[in-house]
Amino acid sequence: MPALRIAVANQKGGTGKTTLALNLAAGLQRRGSTLVLDADPQGSISQWAALAGDGTRLPPVWAVPQGEAGRCIDRGAREHRYLIVDCPPTLQTTGVREILAGVDVVLIPIQPSPLDLWASAEIVTAVRDSRAANQQLKAFVVLNQLDSRNALSRSMHEALAELEIPTLAAGVARRAAYRSAAVEGSSVYHLGQRGAAAAREVEAVIEEVLKS
Image (cartoon, rainbow, N blue to C red; front, top):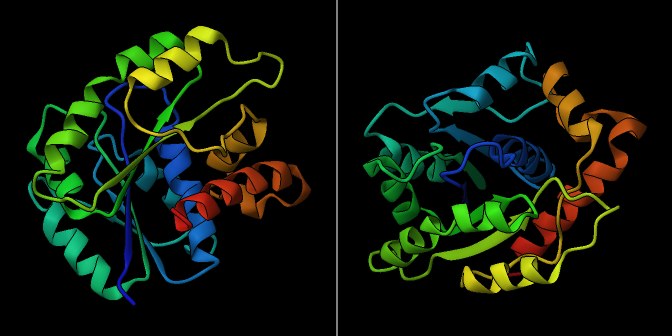
């Protein structure tokens, strides 16, 4: 069975890209061999994994050298069932285009704010351009850091429609569990009851992607 290769990308900082990528990888690891590719020069996901010590709590992480994204994706896909790629927080590099050309799915985490959506509109063009070489590329918006106290406004729905990329029904709430997992070098799956609600959210995202 061919590997499922998923990129998590957004050129806007502060969208929860790395947090989503790491926890998705932890959830996928429960289903099969999973590898994380750290293509973000900041190396946040590598630092997060390093806190796990012996690595038993998190999937393995490979740092991607500049210009080597395609090679790393190909190698990882031969050795693992699932790949998660944490992309650089910019679209102004050939690396992101190379990643989008080599994956099956790109997930775009966006906070539920019209301003954040409009700031992320550039990635629609990147996805459209990447489909010229990778016609099977699927793209989905993942609403991240949702606040249950605030309903999505009409302007939010209009902004989502303008992105021309479908939004997953499953979203991720603003929860302390995600911050705790990062501090402890773990995932929400390993926090016990503290992370149960967050793990259910991540599971819903994974299941929706797997069925897409």
